[in-house]
Length: 68
Image (cartoon, rainbow, N blue to C red; front, top):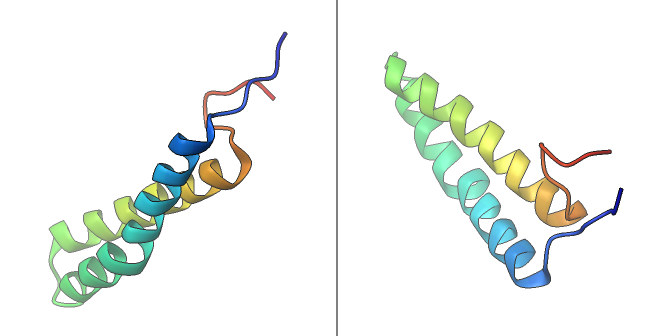
């Protein structure tokens, strides 16, 4: 089995999107969740998981469905 790594432009794009999710969208959704909004709680969890996934994928070049 061949080990493939994501191309550099896509890793940079994923890193930028992950940083936006973690640095902007997560605090905004946590602020909304602090009011007791169920939508805010769902968005906070989604931003956290998506931001971490994109950032780690950009750093390593491997994604969730990649073989180990």
